[in-house]
Length: 278
Image (tube, rainbow, N blue to C red; front, side):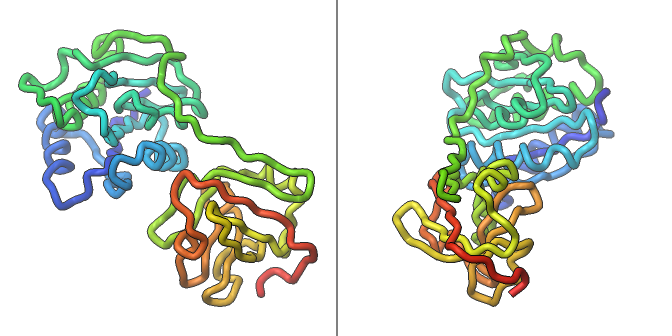
């Protein structure tokens, strides 16, 4: 069942009229459509960032939400435009990996190539498929048009997947992971989850050595929030999305450790425990 809710996720920002025009197209087709701006602040051209935002956000939306993801540096090329039906959502976006993390986690039921759909706008540009393809198709889907009518079904296994290096746990109480997101505060979100934390033997209150990609090191307390360390100090904790994160209380951890999205970062026990909440 479709909720009728359309959520937009782009790297367009708000300076230009792109987001507003997409909403205008949707409303022209379905005046009753409910539209939510998930974010339009994805770093320009960052497919991984878009995929991560979609992955961690989707479960807070109703079953049947239509997500339109337009982070599309390959627009106008041979890349496919897709509609992907997962177990809980309908995803629209370019076949560049931006849909792949959520699709893999939620499970793909069907996928359709809408590159040549009859539901796109009559005058279609080569550079603005958010307006000309994804927005109108999302609107028609929200009105109940069957997915098999909007595109040509393609094998679920043909979707382009992102290649993010998995975490690696060492035998010396260490774990290395990939930086998958850096927020506006400079907090570093990794792809290290609870299973790796348990395997590495990290406990609340442990001091952890943190090593950035260029060898810059720091020491953080493994605690529950950045607010539990002194201003200017590093804290490591499981963030609100369920991944290991590094932050500086009232500071910028990414800048301090020389980290960028895609960097590898390592954590290792520094040897002894301290009280949490210092």
